[in-house]
Image 1 (cartoon, rainbow, N blue to C red):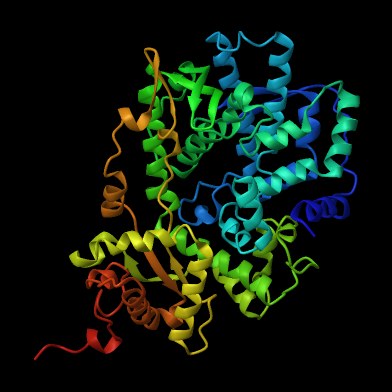
Image 2 (cartoon, rainbow, N blue to C red; image 1 turned 45 degrees about the horizontal axis):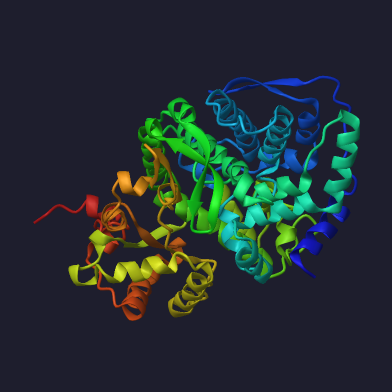
Amino acid sequence: MTLETSINKFMDEYYGELPLYDIREPKVIHMTKLGTHHFSKHEIAVIDTPVVQRLKYISQLGPVYNVFPTARHSRFEHTLGVAISINKMWNSLTENVSLSFLPSSDRTKILSDLRMCAILHDIGHCPFSHVSETVLMDFPSIQSEKIRLGGKPHEILGHYIIKSDVFKSFFEDLSTEYKVELGLDKISNYLLGKVDDPSEEQYIADLINGQIDADKLDYIVRDSDFSGVELALGVDRLLLSLGIEKIQTSEGERRKLIMYEKGIMPLEQLILAKVMLYSAIYHHQKVRALDHMIISILRMLIDEKIEINGNIIESPVDLLKLDDFDLLKLSSGNSNVNDLCKRLKSRQTFKRCLVIASKTVKDESQNQLFDVLKYSEHPIEIRGLNKVLAERIGNDCTEYDVAIDLPMTPKLGETQQKIIKIGGEFKALKEIFPQKGWLESYMANKWKGHIFASDKYRDKACKEGKALFEEIFDIKFKETAETDAKILPLYKKQRTLQDYYTRPQ
C-alpha cells in the first residue's frame, strides 16, 4: 500500500466525515506580539476541525520547555502566526506594486489559498514536532517519497492529508456553505514549495516554502520571544523590501519572490538569528539529550510492537494518531518504555558521556570531524552506529539506553539563490555577505556532537564511544572530551562522607 493510499484510508477510518460547524461571523484573534487579526468564517471552520485542533497538543519546539521554561508554544499558535505573516507579506507586495501584473480577482484568490495553506502547513507533524521526524525517516515509504517529492517528512504527510478524499469532501461542503473557491491541489503543492507553472507562479510557493517565507518569519521571532533568547530582527524593514520579478535560475526562467537592495541588512539579521537559535536552543546539549529520549521511546514502541491508545505503530500514518500528551501518559507502569517516559516527564535526562567537538579532538584529527559531520545527514547510518555501540557496552545495554548525537549544521538556503536585485542584476546573499570558511568556523566554535547514555551505562559508554570513533573515523580525543561531559572522576573527585571527617596528617 502506498503512503498516499495509507493516509487516505487513515483519514477515512480515524476522522470519517470532518465536522463543518456553522460559523456565523468572522473572528478576531488576539496574538502576543502580533496583535489583533481577522480570520474569515471559512478559515475558522477549518481551524475548528480536529485535524488542526490537534496541533494544540504538539509542542513547537519539542521538549525545549524542560530547558527554557517559557518555550511552551505549540504548533497551533505558530500556524495562526504564519497565516498572519502571509497577509503582511502580501500587503507589502501590493504596496510595492509588485502584484500589478495580476487581476484583482486573482490576487484575492491566491491570498485566500495561501492563508489556507498556512493554516494547514503543519498538520503532518507528529509528537514533539521535528524530534519525531528522525523516527519517520526510519520508514521506507517516507524515504522513497522524500526522494520523489522532496520536502520534510511532516510536509509529505501534510501534502497527502490535504489530497485525501475526506479533505476533498469537507472542502466541497466548505465552498458551498461559505461561497469560497479554494484550490485544494494547489494548496497541497504550495506546502512542498511547488506550483503547476513555475515560470509564472513560483513566487506563490516561495511565500510559504521558500528562501524568505512566512514560516521563517514567524518561527524565528516566536522561538526567540518565548525562549527568552533575545535577537535583533528588522522584520518590518524586510517586508518593505520584497518584490516579484522574472529571473533566470538553473531550471530556467521563473517568476520568483525577490528582495531589493534595502532588504540586505534585515535578511542578514534573519540568517544570523537562525544560526543563533540553533547554537543557543535547538542544539543545546540538554535539549539534544531530551530529543534522544523521545526518539528512543518512539523506536521502542515501534520495534517491540507496544500498544499505545489501542494501536500499534506499524507505519508513519500511525504516528499521526498521537500527540505529545499520548507519549507522556506512558509514564505509569513498570515496563522499560514506562520507565523511560517517567524519566522524560521528571526531567531525569540522558547524561553526556563524550563531547565531540573541535576543541575536544587532537589537532591531527580536525579534518576527520568533517567526516563525522557527513553522518548527520544520514540518521539510519547513525542508528546503525548506535546499535554497535550498545552491543560493545554490553551488560544488557540496548540502543534505547545510549544515543550518538551528531546534529546537522544550520542550512543557509536563504543565501544561495540569486534573488537580491542590485541595480539591474540579481545576486545571491553569499556574494554580498561572504560565507567562505563559514562551515569551518561553525565547526571550530559552535558545533558539538555527543554520546549520551543513562546513568547506568555512562562510564562504559564513554570508554566504548571513544574507541568506536577512533576505529571508524580515526579520531584521537583530548581529555576535554570527557571533562566537558563532566565524567567523574576526571571532572572532579568523587567523595564519600568519610572524606569530610578525615583530617590530613
